[in-house]
Image (cartoon, rainbow, N blue to C red; front, side):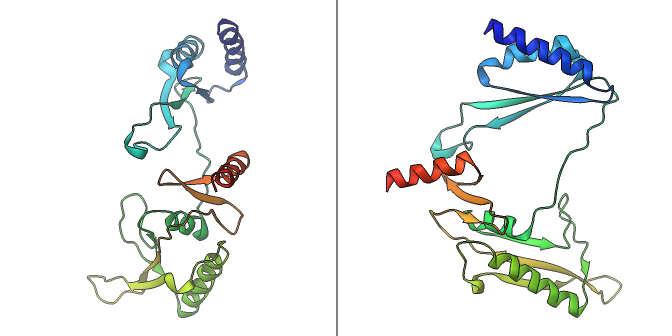
Length: 220
C-alpha cells in the first residue's frame, strides 16, 4: 500500500500543478483507501479546498433487507476558492425514462409543463398540429423499445391549465407508463439496456451487460 500511496501522491501533485486556478479534481477511492486518499488530498490541495464527498453504493441501499456495507467514494477538491464547475448534463429521452418506469414496481408518469425542481405547473403552449406531432414522436419513441410493449398500455393525456384570469392556451402533457414485471432486459432506441437487479432497475452496458447475460444463462 505504501508504494501505491507514493505513486498516487505524485499523480495528485502533477494534477494540482496542471490545473488552472479555477480547476477541480474528482478523486475516486475504494473503502479501504478512503482515509489515506483524503489525507493526501488535504496535504496537496489544502483542506480548505475540500468541496464535497460523493458516496456511490456498490449495491442498492437496503436491497434484500440488508444495508449496503460497501461503497466507493469520490472526493471533490478545487485548486482555490474561485473554482468553476459546469456539470455536464443532457436531457433524458422519452424512451429512456419510459424504459426505467417499465422496470419499476409501479410504472410512472412523465410530465411536460411541470417544472422538475419544485413541481410548479408552468404549462406548454401547443397548437393542434403540434399536439398531433407530439403524439407521433412519443409513439415512435415508445415503439423503439425492445422487446415491444402493447401500445394500448401507454396513455398520453393533455390537460388544460386553468388560469385565474380566464381561459388559458397552456396545457400539461402527461404520459402514463405501465409497469411490466419482466426478467429480460429492455432496450431503448439508442440500444441502452435496462434490467432489474435485486428489485431495483439498473442501466447496464459493456462487460456488466455481458456478465448479467452469462449469469442468467448459467442459472437457467
